[in-house]
Image (cartoon, rainbow, N blue to C red; front, side):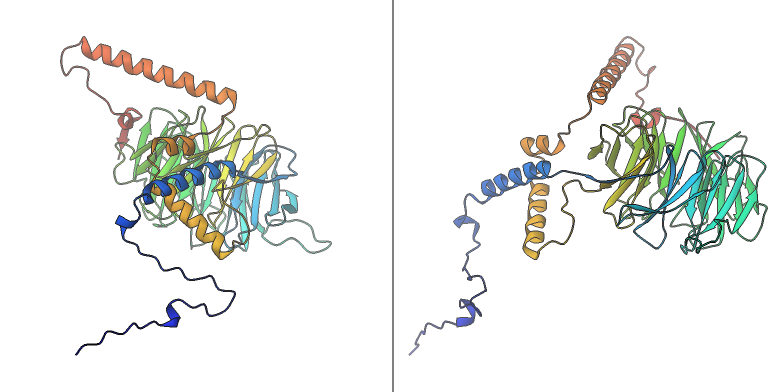
Length: 445
């Protein structure tokens, strides 16, 4: 004879202490919860609206420069240290956690054109309009000591850019040519030229550390291998690139900031056309920097805005601007992936949140869970028309709004004209050129 006994284990339903939350039994069978999706949709809609309410990206403004901020450098080891160089030759070292300047000195006559921190973080290099390369100690001089560089190299021409190797005592400069320097020598160990009169920037690849790329004045981007005596190849575009940034996670990819208001992401193995064209700016793009995750990058433009793009996104996910901020000349993404630093014409450095609606400071566990849950909901319903409209909406300054509208009309007119020409021409005589192929003139090897 079989006897069935009701067995209840108190561990399943009794609280251990009075402070615990009551345990509620739940049946997850979807047939019992017919309104689950609609409930989640409402939550996602509310989360999206709240995100726009709490989107306050501006954190702080670091003022103290007496001329426009021309270049910045992140410290290799310290998150809270930032270096900036201005158009009057002054260099400042900032403590970002305290929002204050800890050191100021006159580094060059004229502009500070470039600066970079050595991989160990013990010293940094600057180049300026006075044709010198100077190496400085990272820590401030002692009481009564003069502010003197460790090393000064006097060059023959003005240097316009500078970058340091990831793990060797080697750095690169650009001006009339691209020079590779050993820290122990006063003359370059290798020089690269390719029929170009000047270069605007040079950058080492952070993954394949022997590779570097530079932007030249003849609208080309040139790739080099330090182990070879000649440049590898170059791509010539329709307009000049101001600077570029390598993806820190994917060795072959780099993004360049162009004069034609766009950014272009290239695969260095295949330069015939860019992988992605990133549009949204309404004036020349002056600087670009990747997030340490390699998934996003930030761009600074002459149109007085900062935009954040996904590496594979054609349009920006975020745009930052203030009434006071003028042409943004340099931009950096902090090494902890949380902040963005911008240096602009009106002598200020601004600190922004990389995620505009993120709450700063310590989060309680329940707060973090709620934030993660609402993030997942927003991802799940991101393509619903209403949620998409709210998430994408941004208020723009009137000038930028009207310029964007004007550019859209101009682009549509060009497209319409092209369609009409094709319609009234012999079939195949007017080929369809994709947006990616339009901007590349040729690749030279």
